[in-house]
Image (cartoon, rainbow, N blue to C red; front, side, top):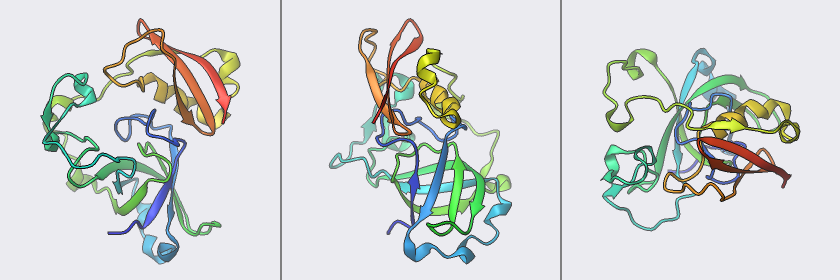
Length: 223
């Protein structure tokens, strides 16, 4: 298989990326097609759907081989489950699946046809292998059992974002960034209140620490 497109998102690295699609609906991304797939006719009828399935490659997964069990972050990283019972990126074939909202289809841009989507959980530049429309009557199963991930995670921390720092974030990115921080981007096995963490977002370096259930932004740096 070869990529048909790549995504443009605010995350230059995987640290900070939500652990599932749709957790932060305010995140905006663009699906930009490879030159040979910049054919408007290939998107005919797509604007009739509200959501899409993105099938993509875990291109940031550099681990060789695979393990039959993994430690899901949802379980605190302390319990092992079978890899096929999780959405871990460390799989025999590094393929990801994300359901995103289709905000609009732009057929004529300098990059050819572009899909603007929200809620994506992808690093900037992630290769997209295929795109399929989300079909509610076939894809939606409200009665489905969700195993250890049966309920959507609530915000894990309260975000303390000093006003003078928030003003350094572009206005149209603020809600998305606060939503990302509320999910607590730290690895589940780390709980040092004095440690300062940082990740890239929308051309900025966002630094923070977490203690007693409160995430405090300590600095915003331009990269």
